[in-house]
Length: 272
Image (cartoon, rainbow, N blue to C red; front, side, top):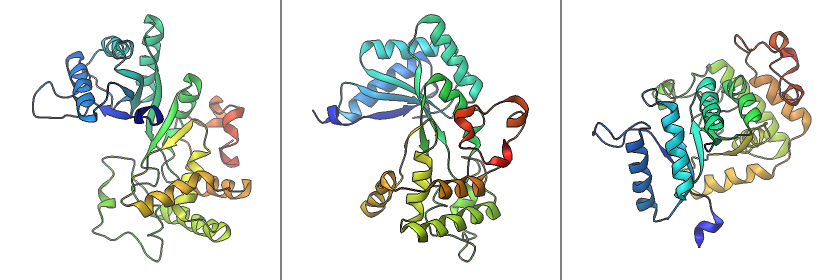
């Protein structure tokens, strides 16, 4: 069948109707939502079921038990989280370990050259728990598509000024500094700015894949080339340096040994 050669993933948790029970991770809603997804997708199973965000109203033992039952039933193959805090994800993993339930193997996260918050807590967690990161908004809500720079700034009326409620805000001076280096490397390699930004992500520890929000076939084909381009060590280091943001408390690398040898290669030298 076609599904044998593809992976079907879907997310659950965001309110799907005005009905009181059609949101969150209650046993009632999860079982119902999976059945509805199977019907809409026309399939017998979902390869990866991802939870859209943490639900503080559902007890984690109940959640992990329900997810385990879905996997054992054959309706779901693997489970993933999305937008969890580090302690939330690790607590869920610990409960799964304690009771012998299925663990999360995927973590969908926001990560880009202009949003590296993922690196402080979730990247080391994913590495420790052998969880693959699937990156959403890898081009920073379209800021890294090559359309904008200091000479052609984001228009005042652009929706990009209103994305702070969905992802960390982006300082425009920092944004344009990153874009300037991307432009320089694009000239050196002959690749596009999106290709370089995506390739940088694909080389980061724990990153398994990126989600592409292409609007048309041309954009999609351009983005797909990203996996094949070759950036030099020097070019990658320039991107590391210009995109670096000083680690917040309590992640000072020199203080608590947050960065093992595995991660030191991705951290700008001034932070080690």
